[in-house]
Amino acid sequence: MSKLVTTGLTKAFSGLVAVNDVSFTMEEGEILGIIGPNGAGKTTFIHLVSGILMPSSGRVEFKGKDITYMPAHERSRLGIARTYQLIHPLENLKVIENVMIGAVFSRGKSLKEARRSAEAICAELGLERLERDTAQLSILEIKKMEIARALANEPEVLFLDEVMAGLNSDETLQLIATVKRIALERKMAVGVVEHVMGVIRELTQRVIVLEAGELIAEGPYETVSKNPRVIEAYLGGAA
Image (cartoon, rainbow, N blue to C red):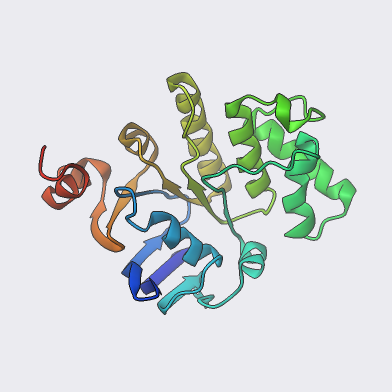
């Protein structure tokens, strides 16, 4: 059984269709790339799957259960987590406390249990010196903290929204290796929204391409990247 399935997922805002009839699946342990030009509907699609937005029509299923109109906090408890394009660490809290939030609010753990869980996750990601203020973190450390906070929800499906943005090449390679490892070890489905095609090539096993809210291509990166419609969407036919 697929971890996550959407069927005919559609979202319109005052007549403007942001996501149009998108059907896809995510499998256990799979790292799926979600790509498309700016304004293609990628983030809106993640909002729909994670429960931030409700669809105009269509269906979302998690492990065979209809969650189409389930609110975000309930989906989080079921096992769907995400990061955001705009990073919002809670600056009045220490690193460890930022990570603990997911365990406390999504999993209902005691503070002691949440701290133990958060420490283990941070060790898994190579995030150290957990009593620091978030203002002291490098960009890579902030990215790791955001992923750690999502992992504290104990997800079976994790969406990473442009998590590589702002990293240099060495940091990007390090985070690619980390995401691959946690997906494999946790048998977790991971959806990656990313603009850097080198990241998609190295990280994902399968790619879906959105343009103007529609799914226009699906398959391995090497196949999708040669698709004439994908090239047209990105380059206007210049390639």
